[in-house]
Length: 114
Length: 112
Picture 1 (cartoon, rainbow over the protein chains, first blue to last red):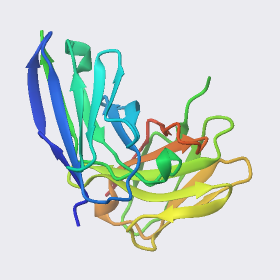
Picture 2: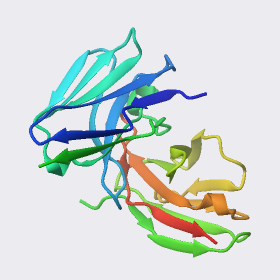
Picture 3: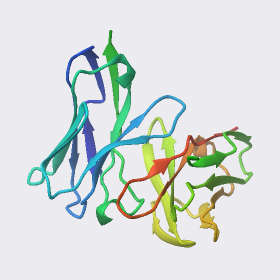
Picture 4: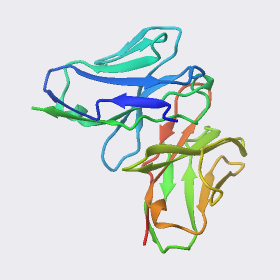
């Protein structure tokens, strides 16, 4: 059972553009919705996370939008920079983020062209 | 502040052997999770330990096992290695208060 579907697989954006990555989930028990960023040779790093009591959260150039009824959440990267080129993963989980059994999407490889 | 430390960084083993990987969490973190990352299957959850007890377990065969010590350091063991076990093994730790998990850089295991 594929619990988490992430799209697109890859994304090419011009510098200064907006990058949008989507994540759809099935498990209604999920109540913690993070996005992770991974550079080659490194482990994933927590970028931003949201809980279902809010529909949007913004941290700098990164925004999460959450649609509980559609069971979807998305990552928006505003003013994309070449340094944002990395692989991004959604990784929803239960327990409000206090438990470490996250279900990762397959990842989106983002390339930001200068 | 020191991050999550995984040792060794690289490992080459032969089919049929066993291997032990180590993870030192961030100081004060009591939860440690392990993940396997491969190009085909992506990041898959192996197991999670909290205060020396296994709290959650993923869908992996019994050849994969782990433990956590009283100082929160964790080890995972894979017995009877198969070629398909070649992967990046990642450890993540947290205070387990909903503030997210911090990953180490992983151990790259190659089985030949």
